[in-house]
Amino acid sequence: MIWRTRLGYGFAILVAIILGFGSRAYGDELWPFLSDHVGDALWASMVYFGFRALLPRSPLRHSLVLALLVSYVIEFSQLYQAEWINQIRGTLLGGLILGHGFLWEDLVRYAVGIALSFALDALYHLIKKNN
Image 1 (tube, rainbow, N blue to C red):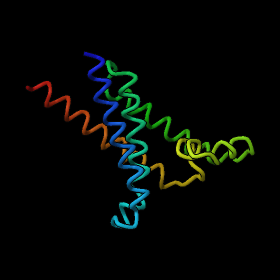
Image 2 (cartoon, helix red, strand yellow):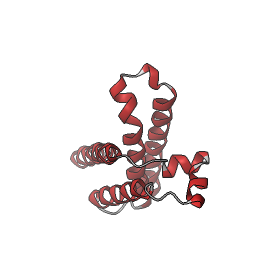
Image 3 (cartoon, rainbow, N blue to C red):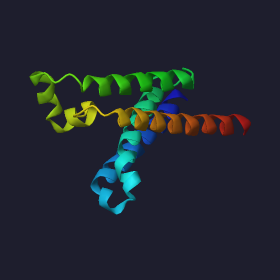
Image 4 (cartoon, one colour):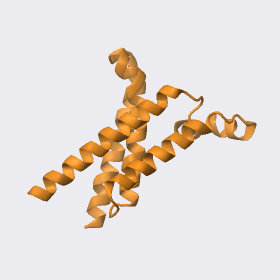
């Protein structure tokens, strides 16, 4: 049963990645508000679902807290601009994971993405429990 749960969360991660790349590739086609904010919210959503996949038996709130902590630590790490970490950030994968520059707004975007993912997850579990 755990493998099915992990597979479901893996699918949620894949959806978040596809939508995130889509928001970057087709940002000009989206409403400006979505284009500006949805990518970071989806990134944080992916982090939340990643923790759910790794810790499927833990309470949902643990994944919420861990996703917020990881997202915020990565964002604050962008204040550190040593050459070695900037070289990592200069790669595609490094830039996607570590970002490039600190923005206060990103903290709000992450919180919204994680909160929405948590709410969807909790709703799914509630519906599943009642069926």
